[in-house]
Length: 159
Length: 159
Image 1 (tube, helix red, strand yellow):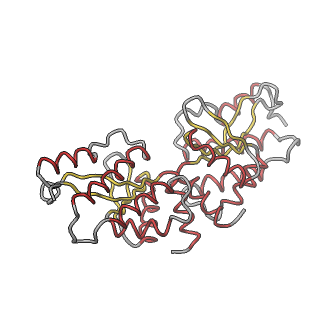
Image 2 (cartoon, chains in turn yellow, blue; image 1 turned 180 degrees about the vertical axis):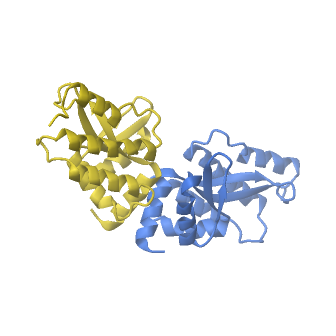
C-alpha cells in the first residue's frame, strides 16, 4: 500500500473508524470466551464504492450493508487486524492508544489454533476491558470479571 | 505542509469534517446576503490538542469549545478556505464534489472588498444551494430563492 494511502486511511480511521477488541461468549470454546479484534469503517450505502476501494487497499476484510442505510467495511481476526494496524500505526493520531493496545493483545495471544493458558487469557481480557473506555462504548456487555467468574466456576484456574 | 499530512487531513475531513457554503442574511450588506465558506473539524474537547495540531498545519482558522463537550476547528472565509482546499483536493475522496464546488464559487466571486453583480451573486447562490444536499443538511434556512425574492423586492436586478 502506498504511504500516501496509508496516511489517508489513518486520517479516515481517526475521523470515523473504529478499532475494537471485544470478549465474545463462545459456548463451544474451552475457555468459554473468545477475544475478537476488528477494525470497522462506516459509510452511507450510497457511497459504498469508497469502502470497496478501502478493501482493495488492504486486500482483506468484508463489506456488508446494514439495514439502516449504512454500509460497513470490517477487518476481523487477529492476523488481518495486525496487518492493517501495522500499516496505519505510523500515521494514526487520535486512535494510537487503541492501535497499540490491540497490537499488544494480538502479539501476546498464542498463535492461531494454539491453546490459551487461562491466566494469560484473563490478563488479555483485562486489556480488552480498556477498549470499552477508549471507544466510549456504553453497551459493552462482556468484561474480564465475567471471564474470571466463568473460569472459577469451571475450575479453569487451578494449577 | 507535508504531503503525508495533507493526505492524513484529507482522510480525516472525509471521515468527520465538513466543507460548507452557506447563505447568511446580512442587513448591512448591499445585496442583503453574504456567501460564507467554511471547513469545520470536530473533536471531543478532551482531545482538542489534535485540533490545535491541525490549526498549526494550516496556519489559520480558529479553535472554539462548544458547550456540549465538542470542540471545533473552523477555517472560514474565501481566502483561507481556498488555500486549505487546494492543499487537500488531491487527496480528498468522499468530499471531492464539495471541495470542487466550493473552489468554483470562490474563484467566480469578486475579490475581497470588490462588489458583486447581483446576477453573479444569484448564480453563485444557486451553487451554494447544492451544499444543502451534498451535506445532508436538514436545517438549511437560506436558499437562492430567498435571495432572488430579496433582489426583486429591492429592485436589484433591473439593468
